[in-house]
Image 1: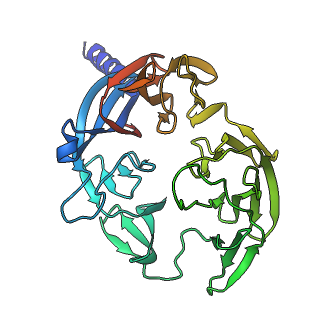
Image 2 (image 1 turned 180 degrees about the vertical axis):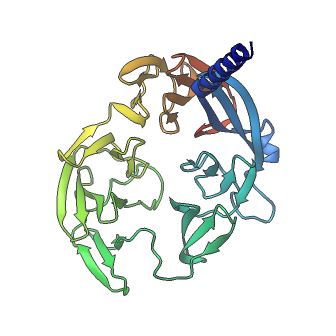
Image 3 (image 1 turned 120 degrees about the vertical axis):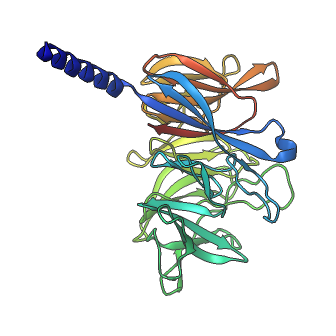
Length: 376
């Protein structure tokens, strides 16, 4: 009898452990504006939990204001720039604040440009006309934030370059560690096409680093409607990667970025292009690669919005954005709208997973941003 009981308890324990182990827990972190945000400026960080693809709960992590007395400009913002989740616990906002999601605390109020994560450290860079130019580090263990006093500290050991737009064509200069300036590119083109609106609009000339040795820039023709994507090496080698012509004037600056899958994407007035460094091609982006097996149509279709795919199979058509979509291991979240004629109304967030292979709708009328997924 005792042997039977022991055998039964062992079997039950193994079965329970197997069941618990098989459960897949994921949580989506979302920032939402308060219903009275116009007066109280509050925004809420909310966690939507899913177990084996089925929503199991919703809870508020913390609330923080976008403005605070005594602090000039923005305080904490989730709707500006790119948010990052580190170690399934720390949220770094697009403006540089740090939030501990696990312990529900605002760790850093400062606003600086995020550079990198390095172990327990989050590295930022400041380049301000009043504050100066320096690096700073926030230690996640100690909670201390400090300016790096070593003038030679550089977490990204690369050339310091700048574009001289006071001459025509533009010139790209490089600075040695000693501070000595030298001309890196004598003819860097004439800059992107000017916008059709606005007075004296300053254009940004993007320098996009592929790694610590190579960067890209767009060499515009004098008529400003053709651009050659150029790759510059640390040893000053210059390689033309691809050309794009018939670029219309636009009110938006051109830009380079890595998509979630690590591809180089160039955006200009003609559209979005995948820059293939190996084949030396610039091809229009048809489907945005969101990582984790998810793809979404780049250009919105007037009849149905965008096709969404998972591992090359269509999983739906939705009026949604791709720039703030968040994916993780078979889970995808998309900001959605209802479109009636020329009018658009926010719906919230549509979530899909490859376990149930079904959509879950999160009705959020005042969405600030989709932050990302954490695995629990």
